[in-house]
Image 1: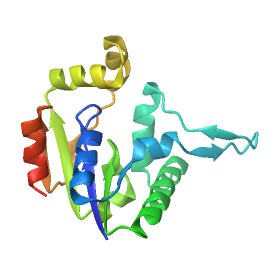
Image 2: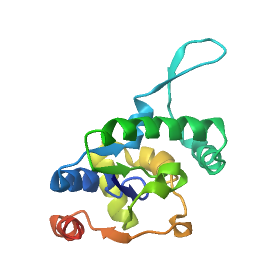
Image 3: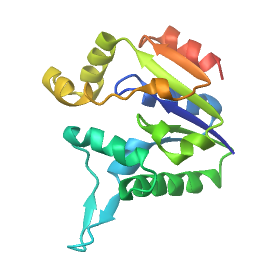
Image 4: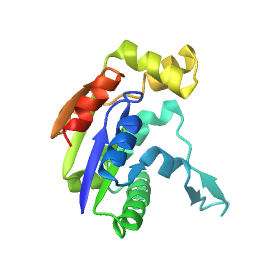
Length: 175
């Protein structure tokens, strides 16, 4: 099985690129944000299911938990992703996985191709506001602070997204 991992800051176009690449390669892509947001966990005290919601002030705490591969949060997210990949791998030889924090997950080591998407901060901001239907204040309060240092990780490809068809075509032509 071939796993293509795509990562980068929020709003750089990971989902768009993953979708178009999955169409080109005729394979599924796994948006880990959707896996997490659509999953429920059982609260051990109240025994009631809860949906996992990430508040911006907890972003660094999430990163710290993912760095600690034995933390409950790390285990939860890694298990959710592994389950989804297991479901998809039964029918597909290639899977595209995309998430901003992907390099912190165990599956990152299994990625046969690792891609980092970058974008100019002004373009990223404008694109995130337009595509996610958020205000400038919401971007500044949440999306802009959700950044990690990607220089600590290795990549097969690093692309600069200019949010135009030419850039997208250049990226897709590599595959």
